[in-house]
Amino acid sequence: MEVIKTKLADCIIIEPKVFGDERGFFLETFHSQRYKEVAGIKEQFVQDNQSRSSKNVLRGLHFQKTKPQGKLVTVTSGEVFDVAVDLRPESETFGQYEAIVLSGDNKLQFYVPPGFAHGFCVLSESADFQYKCTDYYDPNDESGLLWSDPIINIQWPLKAPLLSEKDKIQPLLSEIEAKIKEGWV
Image 1 (cartoon, rainbow, N blue to C red):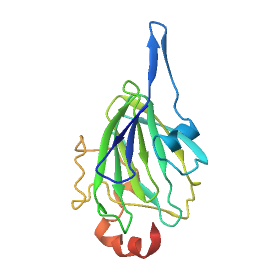
Image 2: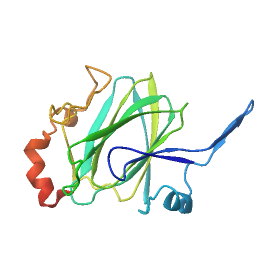
Image 3: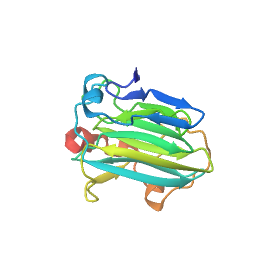
């Protein structure tokens, strides 16, 4: 596999080695020792999730306040624009984002470390999205950021996303920055 660094420390893109021929393909989607030694992912994954979303659905930007989850994300079918926002108070890139297109065709993986908000929008007719998490989901600890926060200024590839009611009213980073720096993330 190839590990590609991003502008956000510890947030990486993984390009797995794909073995294919006229019959199809095979790839290793996770190997604990290799991901630790080659990719530098030291956290242990404790939960796997899968979702399916329709075209123009935007999910995010989500994070847990005091139990941050790292996520190893991939798309098995379809195509998404995937985003991570650095919320680590001590980070030089606090409030900045990284984005990548993940698809069933490119088979890339995106590692979003603990301390980041995460979201994605669907570019294809539908997309199957899978992710491994380094901590358990706790609905009492969840929070988020408004997808269109002008300070973060994510260049989403759609103008009128389909959003959940919760994601329509998430706060701006400026509204919760002090709480984050006091220990949310």
